Length: 299
Image (tube, rainbow, N blue to C red; front, side, top):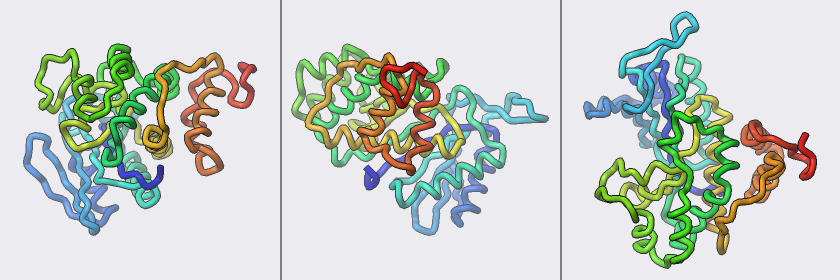
C-alpha cells in the first residue's frame, strides 16, 4: 500500500500560476521554466530532478479574495498543480507542506475544483482492474456521501454506471484488450481522444489505456487542506491495494443503514488501523450518519 507510486493533480485559485510557481520553487529549492505552451505551464525542477508543474485548466472558476470577499479574477488565477511521481512515506510531508504554503499565500479551491489521483498501473492485471471497478461500484453511494462530491462536479466524476459493471461481470474479461473493449462500449468518439467522455467517472481507466498507464480516481473535491488531501491519497492507495491483492471483488452494494459504522469497518479492513490513520478516519466519516462504534445504534 505504501510503496505504490502515484501522482496528484490539485485544482485551485486565489493566487496566480506565477506566484504558485515561485512559492514552490522557493520551498523545493528548484528552478522555474516557463514552457510557453497552451497551458502556460510553469515547471519547477527540484534538485532531485523531479518536475512539479502549475498549469492552466479551463474548468476552474478563477477567483481571488479582496477584503475577505471572493470576486472574479482573470485566467491567470486558474491553477492546477501536477506533481511528479510520488510515494507516500518519502513524499507526503513535502507535499503537505507545499499545500500549506500555497494556502497561506491565498490559494483556495472553488466549488468547481477537483483533485485527481493517478495510481501506477504497472502491477495491475485484468483481474485487478475488474476488482477495482467492482469495489468502487459496491460503495458508490457511501463514497460519494463521505467525500461530499459537489453537484457542480458530478459531470466530471460520475458514479460507475450499471451497464459497464454488468457487462464487465457477465463477460469476465481475461485480457486488457477485452476490458478496453467493454470500457469504450457505447461511445462513438475516438478512443485516442485525450478528453474522452469515458474518463469522467470516479474510477477512470481511459488514462490506463491511452495516456500514462495509470488508474485515475477523480471523486475528490478540490481543497488546500493538507490533512484532507492526505486522507484522499491514503484512501486511493488503500483501494488500489485492495484491488491488487483480492482474488475477487463483488459489485453488490453493501447495506449502509449505519453509514459511519459501515465506513469505519471498511476502512479498518483496508488498513486504516491505529493512531496514524485517526485523522483520516475522521475526515472520511465526518459527513456520514449513524454511530461509528455501534452497528445497531444510530447516534
